[in-house]
Length: 118
Image (cartoon, rainbow, N blue to C red; front, side, top):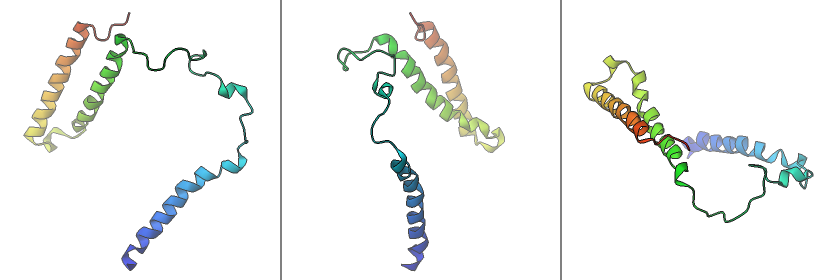
């Protein structure tokens, strides 16, 4: 049990370090909201109206889809930071195939008009 003592000490210290900053502001915070502007609509400046579960227009979907596509591109492009003589031939070929697919996909998306706004 003695070999787990440093781990227990580390857990106690790390929880204190993370919980103390969370608790320090509470004694200094005011009890209520003193500014009515904090309770007003803040995004677009108008009060919400209508049903919150309304359908989005189809024109909004290509933007998040393009972000979802670009995330794996950035992730899988990180092996390019490794010199080519340090990567085996399989890694080098897979990196080139991924770059080719991404290069072909972008003009295809552009030709289909996925990024056009009306």
